[in-house]
Length: 281
Image (cartoon, rainbow, N blue to C red; front, side, top):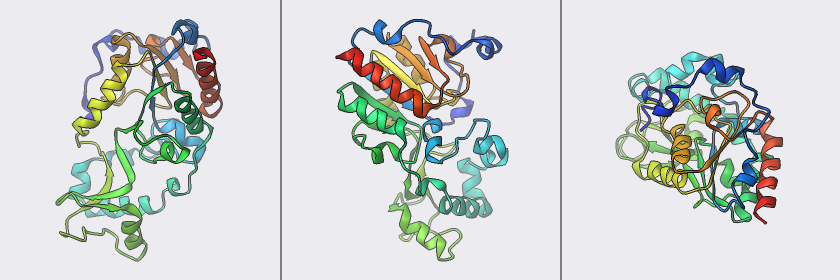
């Protein structure tokens, strides 16, 4: 459920000294994760906004993140605010129309995960992103678990009609500032999960299963502060998997990871994937 920001972190995080997390050296591994996971056969991956920044899509909570620079934008990203305030909806539709994601192309990090899948190692690709760059890079749709939905479809919040987003954005471009549902006249939004909405049970169940049934869990480009997505790391650890984190900034799960990589994702992930593939041969 994505009353996410309000949910408690897993119990194993209660004892984390977050000042120590900030001081910890993240350039060294606690162990050789690849060799420790003897010939890894099942890798589940969680991706966040950081994997798409090299494609020109800003993240949310990084130093230059959308919400870091404009906290009001995060405050407006609640379903209650969206439903109650026509000005919020009009601003949201304009932002969708102008989103850099429409011109974004997959980057080397997205393509590296395709290589991991082609090598037969990818159990599942869980993503918090809504840009579909994984599928556009060549990841099999059946492998991708979209926790927060997709920006490429619109939905009616009254009758549940799903419409291709380009059709609705064409109406916005033509002058409709808050285009109603063509079938029932209800309020439309992108087919994504806003704060205050629940994740779909079948989606979170698939993500939990992927986290609990791998021997290596890799979290990429995510702050690991929003639950339940961040808690997938704990689920994987509890099930005996090793944890690797690839992220520009420290995360609450760094002390529990076998390896933390703070290098640019577009460079670090292809190198890690090559290492995993070589180890499995």
